[in-house]
View 1 (tube, rainbow, N blue to C red):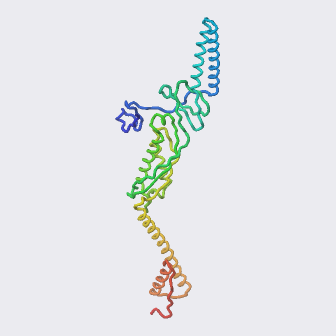
View 2: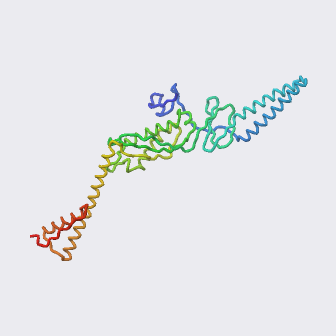
Length: 322
């Protein structure tokens, strides 16, 4: 079974993350182009050989049945059998490569190349072929429950868009590359989610407020983890993000409190400006002269009116304040 090297000293200085065999030898394989020709030409050659071989076999058999014991009849029979076998052998080397698919070709267990050209192709006879899709794959992780950087439990999931870049590594470096992507994507998602807070009032990167940055970090980490399998990441996006059920209500109240405080600050800021403007205009136009006590009373009344959540009921004072 293939394993990964996590220490350079364990395999004689081989790079970390390099696939190695059970004997410690390095599994160094990368995609290369396999020999192939147009399959229709190979099909014609195969049919011609089958037809010619069949004719020779029949002719030789008829000649021997007619009492011709000469070497020509035997040679025709043997040559016909050989041509039929060659024709069958060439016919078995025909492969169909649909668009978006490849054929990984092995000759007696040895990797000899990959056929990427779509259509009917003829490859090396006596070789085995394995289909590997190079189409874009879409994978959504399970909704994971992890703790963010502040220790709050959250539920998070992501969508990973990926494809096979190196068919040889995808086939020989890992056991099942689709399962490999699933496991590594969830591992990377856990690591990124634990590195950032869900949300806070600071200027640091948060999971909720900086989804583009988080998606970029997640894409880089997933790509780094799956590159040894010949896979590449096209895009990663957060598909689900929420506080865990046990703290969701408390965090909702916290968010509501923050929103109320921000709204109150805005209301007070606007009310102070309106009061200041009103007093300034009253004094500038000489409408009324206010001493310090009356100014304080007017400021108090105006702030109550402007900052109150409900409509206020005015009290008309017909007498003097003194």
